[in-house]
Amino acid sequence: MKDIQLYINGEFVNATSGKTFENINPFTNEIINHVAEGDVADVEKAVAAANRAFHGEWGQLKVSERLKYIHKIADLIDQHIEEIAPLESLDTGLPISQTKNMVARAAQNFRFYAEMVSNRLVGEAYQVDGEFINYTIHKPVGVAGLITPWNAPFMLETWKIAPALATGNTVVLKPGEWSPITANRLAEIIDKAELPKGVFNVVHGFGETAGAGLVAHPDVKLISFTGETTTGSEIIKNGADTLKRVSAELGGKSPIIVFDDAAFERALDAATWGIFSFNGERCTANSRLFIQESIYEKFVDALKERIPNIVVGDPLDPQTEVGPLIHVEHFNNVKKYIQIAKEEGAELYSGEVPSAFEKGNFVPPTLLLNVKNQMKVAQEEIFGPVMAVMKFKDEEEVIKLANDTKYGLAGYVWTNDLKRGHRVAQAVDAGMLWINSQNVRDLRIPFGGSKYSGMGREGGHYAFDFYTETQVIHVALSDHHIPQFGKKKS
Image (cartoon, rainbow, N blue to C red; front, side):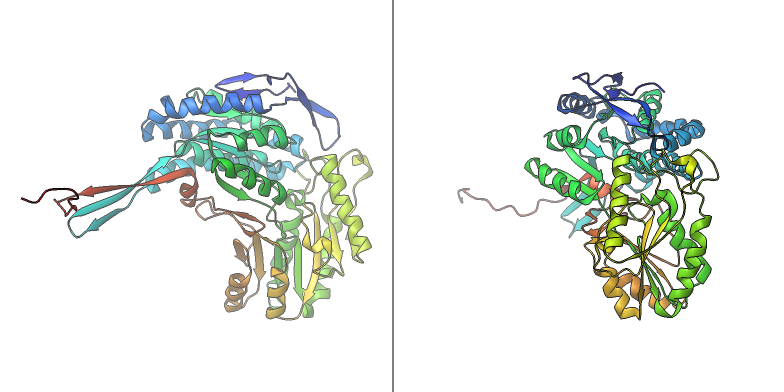
């Protein structure tokens, strides 16, 4: 596979420093290719190109012309889905059965925001006693710095790029350094769409250099970041000097609550899918399972039956359900938490990794039993196929347990008592709750969390609050009274 360059001002170029870094296959831990290592100098070039485009050809386009480009990008993604999904699996270790669905959503992101801008990016009018009419308009802000994570990279990149471009901003993307391949493929696709030079740029590199340079640049007006909480906090601090608008979707330790009247098999399906899909590397994973005590033993036994049957293997095999973790560094971190669980007194129950896959970063699906909510493994984000299992007595207790964490991204409630379902969902301190459902996304709704899980909301028309500036125009309809300071009286 060819090496990866930066994409700046409509051209694929090497890093100014000439440096590269290795991209490693998580399944074999062999080198896939080398990636240009961008830094502050490359960020400067990319931002300058994006700024020129914003104040030039892109900024002068009619909305209808701009949206034609957005639809063209979606059409080109559709043409390449069959090749993008295997690239995503190769680079991340995610099973191809899951990356195919994620890539398909990427094209939908562009079409969705083209429609949203066309139909929902509207202002309001306010009449004032026949003397004034005040109205609002939405204007693009400028250069958007988009810093995306290594899990589900292609879909999450388009989740940010689509609203940024559709609303008229220009983009500098800093992808996750552990999964650069599909970001490069997206740059190749957008290059085919023939956007004006500088509208879309990609600077590969590391957070402390390329990412920090993007956050500090005074001409970057927006930073949208998805990643872990500590980095998000640093970005918010470092963007303060230039008064950047920041949207941060950060970590999670999301609870799934199963009451004794829940649809047992469906709750079991949801609990296993919610933590073991995407190799457990998902911010909204239900990593804390709370089971009502009357069904605790039965539910745990059912989980134990499922665990050995989950297919662990080659991410490019359509039968694989759990693949390798993305990088040996992350693999070691997840293994560290499993060791901590032992030290804290938890009981481990896990599947097996076939010996043929010993070169990969495999952690088998793992249950942590006999866990107390104050344990480190119940409080800190592990970001792997590891679920802490706990019991509870009643509604009051489980709400306290669910909220006893610094995170507040998502939550799941399973009960056939819908009054209780609504009560509990509304009492959980999290940005998003699902009742009797797995994590099913609706592009129209706001996405984001509370507490240490982030700030701001994206998705649907809520993205307009971030990606556009609301301007008010005040128009006088009559000769209203104006105080006449300094005028001589006749």
